[in-house]
Length: 114
Length: 115
Image 1 (tube, helix red, strand yellow):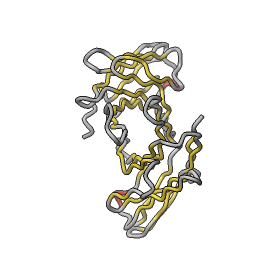
Image 2 (cartoon, chains in turn purple, blue; image 1 turned 30 degrees about the vertical axis):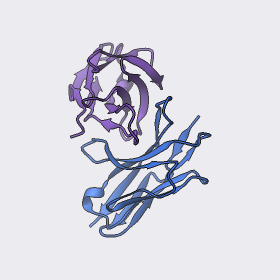
Image 3 (cartoon, rainbow over the protein chains, first blue to last red; image 1 turned 45 degrees about the horizontal axis):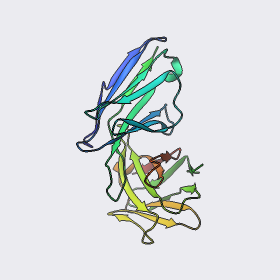
């Protein structure tokens, strides 16, 4: 158990709909990262927040948005969903400072768009 | 921009044997961090090993070790005494130095362990 939690574990929805994925980082971690992993693909970095502020942006579509709240949990909002958005969405957190900078991953949310 | 390349989509190893997974990266930075992550069928991402670029000594974690060649920008993972539980996707990852915070992952190598 990495200490990072994600809800829900599974989500099935229809095209055109909007969903929200939630992530709670490890206690004390200030950075949250979101990744998308399509079937048998690598991880695509979407976006990163640090202590409530957007810090880095990757290949995130305009239909997607995220935020990090004062209690440090983060939400990823996906709207106008398309079939191609079906994927495993990971959240990861990393500590501030420290000497190793590794990420700790949550179990992921599997999104299926029908 | 930094890139990470894993040129072996799939590898196989006999149980108890040794296997090496390759990873190369491209960067103009001098100080960075490298990682290997394992993704078993459960899809959970698990950190296997880390390497700081400023350290010349190769990292080792039990049966897992790396061969870090900074000049060649190569970061291979060696798994000794392979076990059935080692079967998974392995991802190489690069992290920029503090301040940019971006992680870049390779496309992964699927490792099969044969009994």
